[in-house]
Length: 255
Image 1: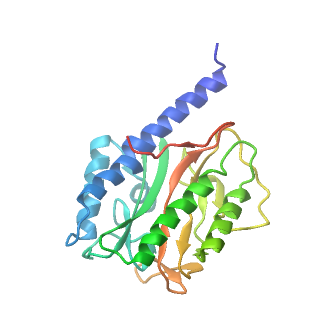
Image 2: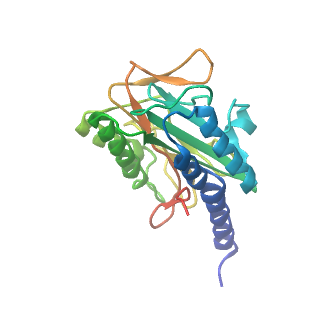
Image 3: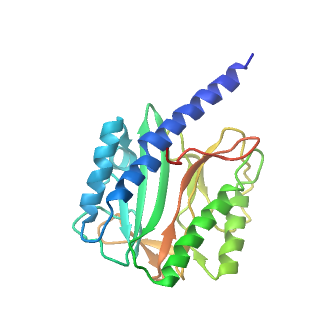
């Protein structure tokens, strides 16, 4: 007979999958991606996400918690995070980051990815592919009793070997019952000061910002949109991941 703790964990994991897959990133993001094309505005793209979340009975986390002026964060080219959906027209060759975080039935999940509006330059194509690979390398470090700092160390080795930098003030974080919870500020770059370890059932995001030269994120005039400093292109890929005694469980994969 399964223990009460095992049953509770199974129920929580199931609820997280509903939030992460159906209500939050994977499927909402996919719906937005299907409509993404040159000539549309970021506000029009955000509207697709809003309609999807409403149909699923989910709440936009940035809007409901922080009063963000949009349902999703859409950042284009030089904007690396927290871009406000608006009148900006998406053009051929753009990099468009779609970051979706939402809650359903009291559980939160968070996911993001940078998409290419073809045709893009070869260097940007490689940046996107390597950004996704950096996230996957970080996810592989998630597990029971593994060091949190191992995520950043592994990503840092990959970035350095490929000639990239990492944005060092946009960190991963705990998520689950709230959008940001313990463990907060999980570095996705190498650090020696963090001695914390993961435990079975811990839920975290893994979201490195891989850049062609940027080191920090700075806030723009609108009070939300973040830019790389020094100015450089940067991409972000993110999943919500559960640490287990076996393999990490990604809850923001599409159906």
